[in-house]
Length: 287
Image (tube, rainbow, N blue to C red; front, side, top):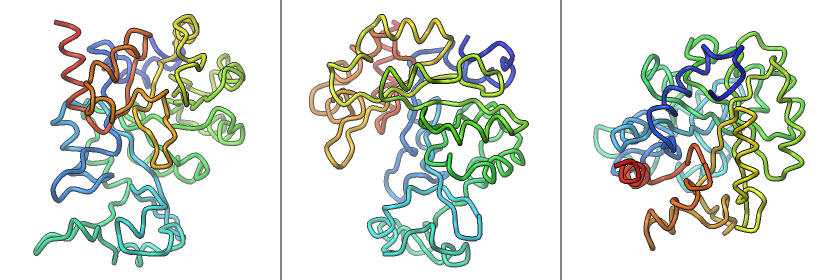
């Protein structure tokens, strides 16, 4: 079981999905095809139909504290807007649309986070909320209103002690996924603190010589009842998030080349833009 026994109920869905099949297939902001932008309800539906167990969603907010599913920094590319979305009011954001996705009778707008998540309340799907930790505790109160704590994983860098402190003060023990780049960050996590519902770690490795590629290290993480999550992405800056075992390798070589070594190491969840390929590989390995 992943996570502390004290939090078995709220961690129930994560553990149920992991028990049904590993690795967990986590879609990176949904599957954005055709008229469907990433970080939208339609992209989530497409991800689920492509075999995903969960979806990573990016969080942004307006200046008047309305939360949106959007990765800030991509405003010009996606919306044709030079200003950062976080400098705009909700009324101004309502006027924006995904310029390459609009079509007659269908305006593709930036979606409010609560509306998107609420569409899937009670469904067997988990959401990993990214880029949100500096918005706590305001965001946590919004999430409380959704009453879907068992479906939400909160990503946070392991070194963000102030954000972890906000979780300690909050009554709802949301499952937490700590992002760690070094063994020192991993060692500093509050494993014995029941006020922080630490269910897993997202490991970042820029090359294959990193300690995260040592199976003994991953075994140690598992002994602490933590799920091991990796991001199968190389950033647009060229920086790999897990040693170059990424989506590009899955397409240009094969899914086996990209992911089988990671699964042999004991990785429990893979975040990818190609959930159907990962799902097919998982099923093939279990035949």
